[in-house]
Image (tube, rainbow, N blue to C red):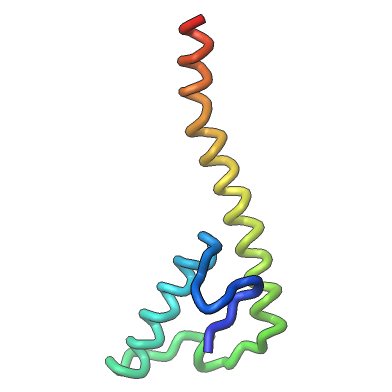
Length: 84
């Protein structure tokens, strides 16, 4: 079972969506195709530890999102400044 802190049945938070997608593919690969089990399946990572890892991942994803947002905003701001 996959559980994401602060999420209901559907995943609304963008940082959780790629992780979910990746884990679902790994799950199907292991249980249906016979691929080697990833650590999160074979090691049975406790939920508390998963929460800590997700918080760290969310913080780094949030930093990346802010940097991308800042980067994409700059050209528009420069264009507006040049138009005045």
